[in-house]
Length: 307
Image: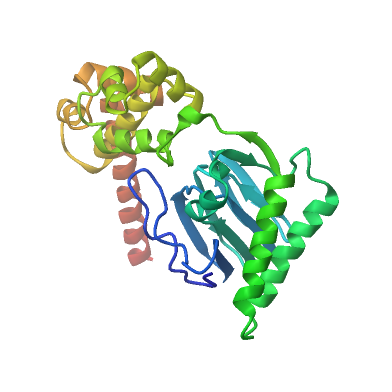
């Protein structure tokens, strides 16, 4: 296992579809991280194994599939395989995260990655939750020891934790069509869109890239993201156009072409729907505010000099 603190080396190898790779130790079924810092940001990622997080002291904010969890001292959060998540620690915090290696667990239990987990799962009792916290606390305590048998004891606790999680804390099964070849297919599709949204994409074309019919792809995408393919693609393009309006001198027509919109009119329509104002009006308003701010700052400077 890996026991780290403050400035960890994990969460640095993330693929274009947010899969975290190459972080698991060979001698253990899980990556164990002891978090002890005042500030830490964990980038958005997912993995094939489940993760469990426990706060010993202090608050932290986790976002799991767009749902926010603010945990405090003594709180525990279970993150299911394939769930996209990130975290922010912005005050004194000490806690533990245990991320199980999905490939290792699959050798013991081939469909382990299909299960969803919850701290409040129907089969989990208060005693089960207390047992899980006791195991997490024991691993934290062992992390400070230099005993020769420390690795054996930690691994024993990890396997006991796995048994408890899979027998008491499961709350459902992920749909098979959301997973392909051990990958989160939805995040793979989103990664593809983030990379290619400036191109003239169609739903049929993208569906074909992932070997789906357009109809099945449409249902899968809508169920997973809450948006239609067109809505999601337009949102990506609008966000890029928004940035370019603020940070470049390109014309609206040039920006529409650079961000994948078929025409300046389509950018205008989408931007007005998204922001309630046309691109030209937005740019003019932003520049007016900036000019007023600069003028006000210059006037204040002159007043201070004349005082």
